[in-house]
Length: 549
Image (tube, rainbow, N blue to C red; front, side, top):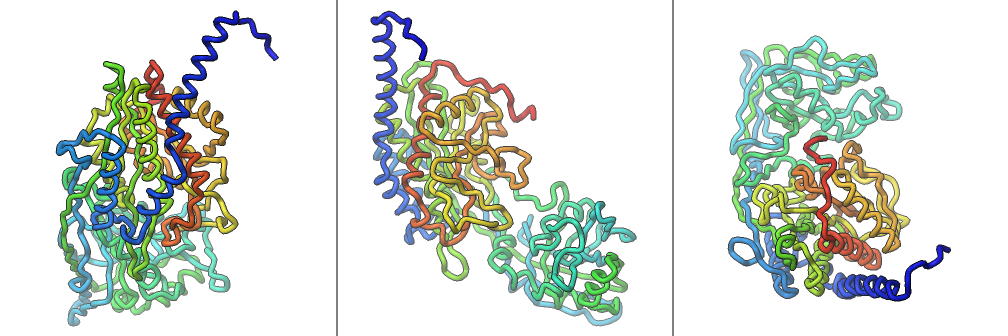
């Protein structure tokens, strides 16, 4: 033990200062209670809010509740209307399947109109009409490791290309014959789009391979198809649709097996026969389909609706430093109701982060006199459909971004690993952590911010898990929540999450999924990190800005 060398008088001063700092923190922490976290979350994840889908009445009810809580605890509205709402306009385009059709022309024969379901992804306009010659490109795979190239000998530029989902399979056990296991899955089409797009086709027609047992992707995942065949964008930001093929405008269309066999009719081969030949020889067998032209028409209905972010300020007391702000964020939207009438409650994702921000705001109000810098509590809508609320805020900030010191983002902070949490969910490994651990994403841009986190988490007796933190991680969590729209503007970020569990994006992500003891621990941690940022004299240094990565 190091011998005390301070005179008794100075030792007393140090102890008093330490105690007063601790009391200040305790004052804020005392107001964060499990009972209040339970109360907020039970409403946000209730039947009444119907899954809080952006643009739906349940989200509006959630926004109203948050504005009421902001007023109750004493946050200051800084939006234009003084009602805590920062509104933007959501544009929804929904495919009218009844008006969608494929017409196949075989030279002199009469045209064949096929009215089986088709799904056009990511529409850029209210109507789609395209027509062209067709190339069959097998599975649409290029794999240098396997010396396998579906595009050899065919030119896709400005053509309509027909490809099967998945990849060459061993018929005895339905496993991939190629090294890349991604081709075994029904989601393999996602991996093919870049390679297809680089070859500049007019459109890509994707059909379920016969060995899958499905006639259409709708049979395999109807909810997914209905989701993917809708387009959402923010009117004020212009056309910022999620691009399936970056840098190219090829239409991506899922078609029925009956349509594929009709398209192939003039080749004298069925899709099933072609698949058998490709799989048995491990040869792509791609070709221009003779004397065949395909025309596709689809129409989309268009809706515009104002949707809110919710924001409230706690002002600091330093005449100059109060102009700077620490932003706490959490998205309060979720996935709504599925076609079976099941509610996606989103208790962990992200009623947990949403409720935590109410408590954190109240904690800062209780010790507002300690703050040098200001605190902005910011609840985002539109996260689940493309980070829209945070994109809009970054474009139209309520406080200038150059005055924003840091962003602390909370998304899924209420769960603990259980015996059920094993394996994979939506092809992502289940990663939910134990009682005393938290997944940390961020800290790359500021050594100061990471140091504050490390000291604070040690103080509260928790452990950091940085296993998902790399921007190059295959699951790309660094880019998948609202913190990213701060990071890309060179604002240092910390994103806290307890990880992905087996109830992620399922109706079973409900109140029973939440462990409120851990929920409070994470809320306390987030509050204490922001408290340090708001009360220390120096602004943290951005020593590794995202713009220089």
